[in-house]
Length: 364
Image (tube, rainbow, N blue to C red; front, top):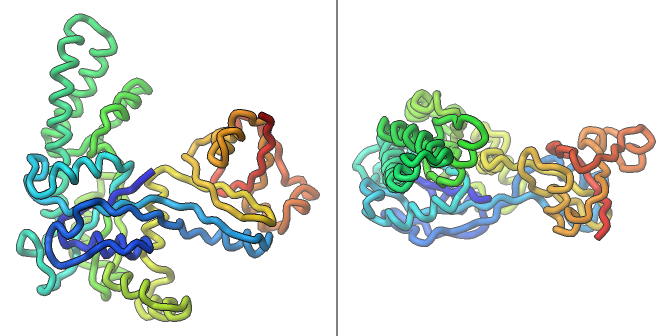
C-alpha cells in the first residue's frame, strides 16, 4: 500500500518526502526537479511498541511501515501531456491514497509556477487535471459498455448506470470519491475502474514556522473549501521539519519543538494519518527474540493477519491466542494476563482489533 505526495511544483513535496524518509530526494527551486518518483519506506510512529519493548525487553524491535512516494509536480494541461503529465498520472494511479501538499506561506525567494500564492487555485488546478484524466477514461469505458447494455446484458447495464453517474459528477468538477456506491456490485466496479479521483486524500498545508501550531489565513481558506470532502487537513511547516531532522539528538529536537509550541514533529502526525488513510491498522507479536508491529487492513480476520507473517500460517491456521494491548500493559506479561483471564483463544472468524497482541497456532 502506497501513499503518493502530489502538488504543484515548488510547494515543498520533495523536502517533505526527505523529512518523512531517510532517502534524500533532490529538492530545488525550479519545476520538475523530481522526474522519477522516489519511494521511501517510513516507520509509523507508535508509542505502544515502545511500551511493549519496555515490558518484554526483546533482542530487536520492528515497527510498522508505510510506503510514501514523492511524485513529480503537476501543472495545468497535465491531462493532455503537458509538463510530465502522463508520467505523473501513471505514477499516481499506482498509489492507493493521495497526500496533497498545498503552499500556504509567502516567500518571495521561492518561485511559484503561477506567479503568486493562492492555495485554492492550486488545489483546483490539480483537481481539474485529475478529473479530466478520469473523465477521458470513463468516456472510453462507456463507449465499450453502451453496446453491451443495449443488448439487455444486466451486468453491462449496472456498469453503464454507475459510469453515467461518475461522468456527470466529473463534469460538475467534483471528484469520483464524492460518489457513494449503491451496494456491493457498484463497490467492486468502482475499484475495478481505478479512477485517480476515487482515491482517498488528505491535505497538507505547508506553512511558515510561525503558523505551524494554529495555521494562517490560507489554511482557513482550505479548511472551508474541503469541509464537505470528509478529508483531513494537516498543518505542517516543512522548512522547520527539515531543520528538525538535521538535529543530532532527541533532546535537541525536543527543545526545537517546544520553542515552536509543538509536542511532536508534524511528520509523525502525517505518517499516522497516511497509515489511517490507507485503511491500515497494527497488531503486535511480542517475544524475547522480537517485538514487532504488523500491518493489516482494517477488518482483517485472524487467518489473514497470520498470513502477513507467512502464507503457511494462513493456510494451516488452527487458532489465534489474543491479548488486548491495554490488558498486556496493565498486567505486564503474557503469563499474568493468563492468570487474570485476559488471554483469549479465537478462531477463523475473529476480526483483529487494532493493538491486539497475538500468537498463532498452525499446522501445515
